[in-house]
Length: 306
Length: 306
View (cartoon, each protein chain N blue to C red):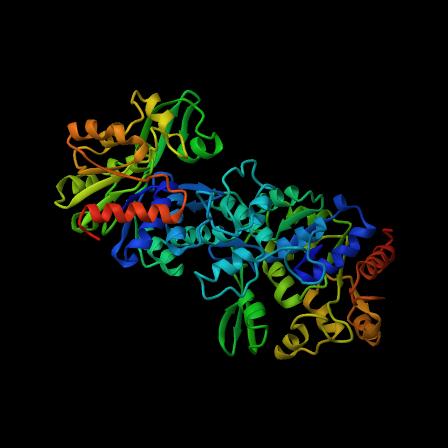
């Protein structure tokens, strides 16, 4: 699976009900990684790890269930900006990651250490160990991803999205082989521009996708032409695209074999077919793990895998 | 005041009841400073800051009242050793200090920022901005201070105490002037070997004490020849000294004018006098702020200051 944060986590919860954890490798966006209070935070990696561990917050797209925010509140004594919510238990992950990176460990190594500490057997790989930063050029200036999405609630009008460092970034160890050898690559229902975009901007990853022989299937993050959470529809329009299944498929050409779309987007099937992309119609509003599991099974069955 | 941690905090609570906070400068031991989980922890500076802010834990010698330990518990997932107790609220201080030091700020600058964030008007200075480390050579090998005191509960037999880096360390900005200009220098009832020793091992501080004209008074950490908390009596014996008022005075020659001793050590008055040290007999078992205040007032009055 190629994954961002929230949307990917929702689908992963379903996938984990129908597939062996040890058979899954998740390659995760690191373009949103940020330093908060000097701590190295990898929001998407943590969301995937916590989800795979079964300790993610059940509704919010971030953090742990039953966490508290006493340290964050106390940080308010020292910092003006405490808009990025870091729980007390969550903080331990960032403290550990920060210390290990400062000691010279690679992000991929630390990611493995963290997921093992959580007892996670799903393999989780950062897309790269090199620094990549998703920057959003907006009418209010250039904003790093978290500032755009969390602090400014995706309100500023987007002009351009850049993945700084991606051109020079090498895929993390294991990423290219995982893509090459996977029976199926699933692109999670994450934002194709903000969350999957950084992955595809890493040349080695794009090349691996283009060269692989097995199927590559994306799960559309749109439901009835709208994104259940997040600014995707607005973003597509801002950048001159119609928020439709075709727009999603277009983001993943030329390596996409099929797109899982929602029943509500059924009318997109012919236009997808005309564009050479097979449509798998299913339920993509993953408001429960069960629903996500049904769609995950449908996807695997359609590919003859379950 | 020259201060270590716990003992100094107890006396400071009394002093704050009888003196203006803005008239007090505390020069604090940094020989116990340590990295835990990559975070820069300054136990004595924090104990003094939290005490001056009125937010220190009322009984424990460390940390904040009403703190929780959820992050520490979660750190147990990543680290074997979580014996050094860092509360969730306390952690914010260490996160801030770590980030500021990494950004190139001096410890003295950060210490001022932290005490101001806590609304503290007492001036708090680290003894030095340079790295000094108190090392305890024991029968079980060389141990850094926190490991000896907290993890090993001061049990290993001590052979020697070293203050690594002290010979090269320069007093932090303001320290020498504070010692020179103080009406009275009070050496807090901290462990003279473990907590005040590092301060005196910084040449510029010792020289400032030797050169100053005003009084220098120590408050004995012994009560009836024993330390109410900590390993002082045992330590003195291990190093060939009798745990008595004279042993304390000996640690502070030749710049000591008077020693505050407990009623229970009254018999030490003549031997102190013979050694040229005036004794001020008072209550030094500071089991309440009120008791500490009575002794602080006695000390100031004896010197004609209150």
